[in-house]
Length: 450
Image 1 (cartoon, rainbow, N blue to C red):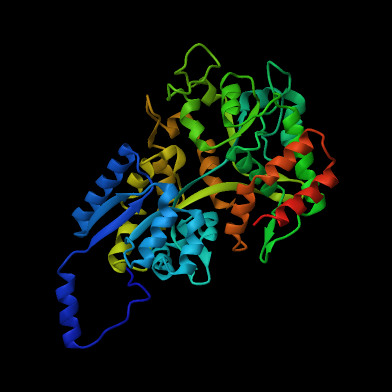
Image 2 (image 1 turned 45 degrees about the vertical axis):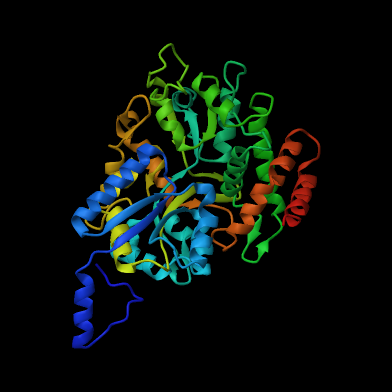
């Protein structure tokens, strides 16, 4: 293992003897994880035991409720009592590194040891800092357009990889109530609408923040976003719609397209009794999964390259860590133990490290063999064809979020959480103002977010 770049080279016989004596004792590491469900904890504890057997370092797996993670980390930092490694969400990576909670040098060394080119570029970019990388990307997922590939093929339609392709499919397939062209999120107080809208804005290259913080939305590109969203909302059932109606209508065969997270993948295949497909009389049938296609990256007319909306999780090595031992644990978890890391919940843990230098697809291939499901189990590779599995994982290469590239994630999060974009877009859909007036109202409301 490469020595951490912060380690000082110490010389002299006396120093060497001290280091030898210290090296005789294994470190005990503390690992905070937000994966606190019993089955997921058990998997992490097994991985820690396997690591201890090969390294001699004991790992104490400590569950932390995700909503408490920020305050607990801040308090532990103030007390000089941080754990060695923290499994955390994207929102903490750069702020914690700036605050001194995370050791960016150690994370950067781990990534370089494993090979930066073996990681999904989008996942690395989100944690990039002046010092290298704030944290080590572990896993993630990308939001998806889920669509009836069988209906698209019958109608000679292209996959919904762009605004134009989505609207062409709406025109061809919308035939309510038997088939709605789309089920768009329209319930303004649901985070689901916030996520879907951010994805749609990103697809057209529109963001409310830039390098200096909040900045006005581009009127022409935002108008394209509004017109697109209104079109898919008009192809949806009436009412306040969110994830529940989206899934129910797709599962019953009454929706051509929805936007959802990958946590729908096992349900689509009839592996979860609490959310069965109702497209036929067999709630355990995989027929709907076989008829489904997915798109993770789609584009608008002002952004031909498109974008994927991604949620990435990271291993942060803290400033209080036993650094070399912590690095060893993270490297193990991303290499020999990576299969166990992903197996915690494969449907929501896409491999951000596709493979090794010697075998570039080792981990993406392994991921496809991991069982998903609740009441029944099956590997994703048995449920979906290789091209679809590649599309699922490939979104992480270009995954984006508002504010990340500009160092303004915290500001973007405040705007999203205020739900002013949801409200004003819904009012536009309902005909309360035209597109130009809505762009002006959005700019005014966003500028007022504190």
